[in-house]
Length: 300
Image 1: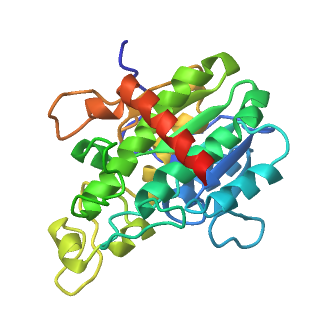
Image 2 (image 1 turned 135 degrees about the vertical axis):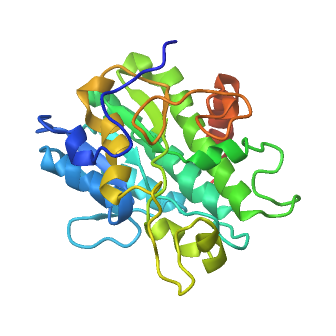
């Protein structure tokens, strides 16, 4: 399969991706769309005419409540949705919790929030996606997926020592695999699914990181002030690949792929420190994870 290229790059903004694109009549859900790259994703989609529903834990105004770590909340959201949905942008997430925490269903909290909640949402709305005729599923993964495959033997760190970054990494590997699984199952329904990494952006996602970690990344000075290294992107740039996958005509019919933060399809290179890990796009792992998640969701 030939790697897909686009005319955009890492500095392209979300609004530039959708320049000249008319999304009137398209209904899109963005989880975690109240801040960060989620907010910029919403702004760009609405600016192009889409009807965007912001799903967030603490809704205000016309936003809708959705706690991804609570499957009851997810099911209530699904039950309340009427009619087609043309795209779901699975943007909400938490990162590198310093201590192991679990959701009410017993899942490690990063995996429950970043992956299982989105899995339940997307599979719960499959019929609504099918009704759209040309729907898209967009999974916000991370370059952290390079750090760890999904651990089917101890995914919740019940036996192995908890590591904040490994926990985050496997949740983002799971997000990428969800896109692969959906692409394999739902093509006949006209549903495409892709994943991407947004790159480094100052957002609330970093709220659990300590100052030493931020300084090591070059994102904080000695006085505790945030600084922006050259390799960081603005939130408007960070949202670009999100709207590319959710709404650009260039992605019509494209499915089961992983895109890097430069708005190009990522290269799969064994042992690489960039691109996409083989375990994040492995069809066998995607199928296994799909069944694993179905069983977990059914049990709660």
